[in-house]
Image (cartoon, rainbow, N blue to C red):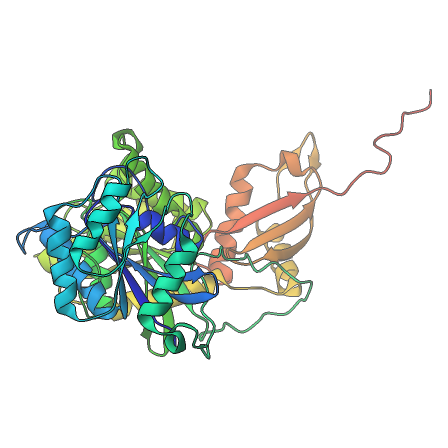
Amino acid sequence: MSFTVAIVGRPNVGKSTLFNRLVGKKLALVDDTPGVTRDRRPGDARLMGLTFTIIDTAGLEEADEESLQGRMRAQTEAAIDEADLSLFVVDAKNGLTPVDTALAEMLRRRGKPVVLVANKSEARGSDSGFYDAYTLGLGEPTPISAEHGEGMLDLRDAIVEAIGKDRAYAKDDVAVTDVDIPPGDNEADGEDEEPIYDDTKPLRVAIVGRPNAGKSTLINRFLGEDRLLTGPEAGITRDSISVEWDWRGRTIKMFDTAGMRRKARVTEKLEKLSVADALRAIRFAETVVIVFDATIPFEKQDLQIVDLVLREGRAAVLAFNKWDMIEDRQAVLADLREKTDRLLPQARGIRAVPISGQTGWGLDKLMQSIIDTDRVWNKRISTARLNRWLETQQIQHPPPAVSGRRIKLKYMTQVKARPPAFMISCTRSDALPESYTRYLINGLRADFDMPSVPIRIHFRSPDNPYESKKKRT
């Protein structure tokens, strides 16, 4: 079996940089600001023949248990208890601090293997910090440069010695796959069949919304544990963290994302990085849950987030969180339904579910809505059915005439799913008004039961073989 390694240390010693180096991708946010990482982030590491699970953690600091720093420390301690080995990272450039000494004592009390890592050893004047690391009593420090990739061979040897060769090079029966490979669009392969929806395939779900809408609390309730850092402070989550769990036998890979504020209010570099990471999670996901605060729903930013998700072509579900704080629920629910239809006409029929992440109320209904929406997002319709439908639509509402000549819609086929996209061969495609496109999209939603997901229609005019030839005079 494989093994798990936790990267620990005080803030700003280069833990996330080392994490990105080991996983081979820039997954964790890196900035000069101390305390960027807050949640624990797992990843699949590869180091010169070694494969193992690596966990990036928040910087350990002495703080009150109820404070944000105290809750971050609890998350890091949980990662240490979960791991088989800890990489204790110290800053060789700036030397040791009393916090390093306290952390070394805490790791000794855990009784698990520890590899002492002296990062930033390429810097001028780092020798004194490197030799000071011996005083921690955790053995010989391993000098590395996480930013430049120096010392990785020595780090591998230190890990093998600490964990043991048999454990280090044990082969797993099941291969581990990266969670950050972009999803394909499932292009059409030329077959005119309507495939059966695969309800056993793992489903990727992103949770997005404004800050303090309850996204992390919602995921913790799904998992049944305090896996993600939560609290009353807005903007706690910075990285997009993925967690995996099973719902009725199906694997769900869920992404917690940073709260997305209005673009004009995002001025700090770190928040820009967090929002960019959230956008990447949206593009990777199949279904996106937009979490609204039911006490203050339909802010302008809420509507912009929904529009963003639909423009990215993702399947969308609305979750009205904090429902336990609503008193007159029937009246509020009727008002939310009316506003959903009126303010989101581009997502007609979108599924909206009232929930409470704090109590767990409505979560099963939310998951069922996610599955149902994903089923529509993957839907394919045979060409024969589409052309019969297209003929009926033209009889009920013929395309307009342009310059005295009526536009003819000749042929229709579905070119892809995820989201459903269709191609219609017609005359004068450039002259077809947008209103008629909306008419066809609404007809597809109603007649083929395709609510809420983005539907795209492309029009193509056949080539005129005589267009380039000059007329004879």
